[in-house]
Image 1: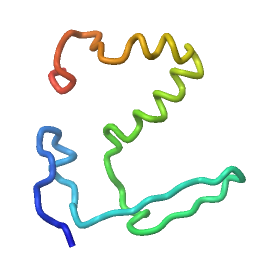
Image 2: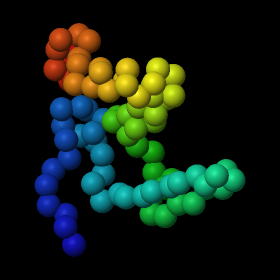
Image 3: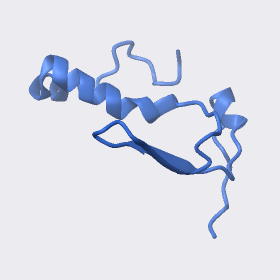
Image 4: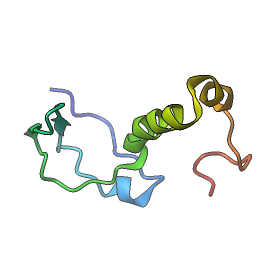
Length: 82
């Protein structure tokens, strides 16, 4: 069992996370949910939403346009500086 390391602390919510929890839940095409593990535990989504936002951006703006923006930060600051 691998349980070494520390939780990230640069975001307060991540620093409060219980590293022993793990769960995954998926929704199939018929809308049925399938989950295992700690699926009832609340957690901060942080970057978990990025794949969905990426999908929505491609759907709205097209893959070529979205690809042209990857790697750019609109503020010019590091991602965690704001």
